[in-house]
Amino acid sequence: MKQNLKMRGLLSCHANNGKTIIDYEHYQFGRKELILYGMESMGIVLLFAYFFYQSLFAVIPLIPVGFFFLIRKRKKLSQKQQITLKLQFKEAILSISAAMRAGYSAENAIRESDKDMERMFGANSLICKELHYMIGGMQNNIPVEKLMQTFGYRSKVDEIKEFGDIFAISKKNGGNMVQVISETAEIISRKLEVDREIETLIGAKKLEQNIMNLVPFFILMYVNITSKGFFQVLYHNAAGNIIMTIGVVIYLGTVMLEDKIMEIHI
Image (cartoon, rainbow, N blue to C red):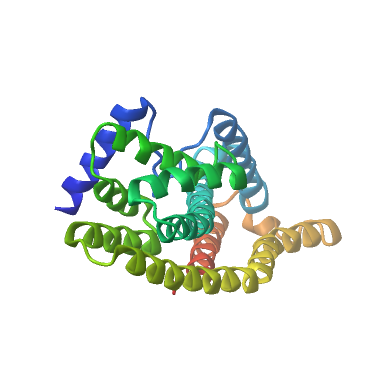
C-alpha cells in the first residue's frame, strides 16, 4: 500500500513539473561532483597502493576501495541533504500552522508557506522544490493529503513521515485540523531542535574521526622517512601482501564501525 502511494506521488510530480523528483535515500551526484569525488576516490586508491603495497600494479585490485569511499561519500551527502530538509521542513510546518490558524485552508496554507520559504531559503532550496511539487499536484486535482503523505515516504525522514500521516488522517476525517497540525508541528519542531543539538555535540567527534582515519598513513610515512627499509620485508612478496591486505580490510572495517557509531537516531 505504501509502495503504491509512493509511486503515485512520484508519477504525479513528474507529470506536474516535468522534472526528476529528488531521491533523498540515494543522493544523485551532479556532473562536477562526480568528477570531483571520482578524482578523490582515485587519490585514495593511489594512497593505499603506495603505503600498503608500494606498487602501481596494486591500483587495479584496489579499485573496490575507491568505490567504497565513493559510496561512503554518497551516503554522507544523502544524510546531509536529509538534515537540511528536516531543518527547512520545520520552518515550513510552522508557517503552514500559522497560516491555518489565520483562517487559510490547508491548500492555501501550503501556498503561503511556499512564499515564506522562498524568502527564507530561496526558490532552489529543497523545501521550496517540494512545495512547488505539491502546488503543481493540487493544480492537477491531486488531494493535498496524498501529496503530503507521499512526500513523507519519499523523504525517508521519520519526522516528515509522521507529519504526512497525521496531516492525511486529519484531512480525511475532518477533525479539528488546525489544532492537530499546530500541536504536531510543535512536537516535531522540538524533536528537530534536539536532533540539531545532538548533531552539534557530535560535530567535534566527527572531526576527530576524520583525523584518526589519517593517522595510520602518517605513521607509515613517518617510519618510512625516519627508518628507511623498516617495512621493506612487507612489500613485493606474497606473505607481506597478505598481511597488508588484512591491514586494509581491518582499516575499512574500522571506518565502517566509526560511521555506524556516529549515527545517532532519536
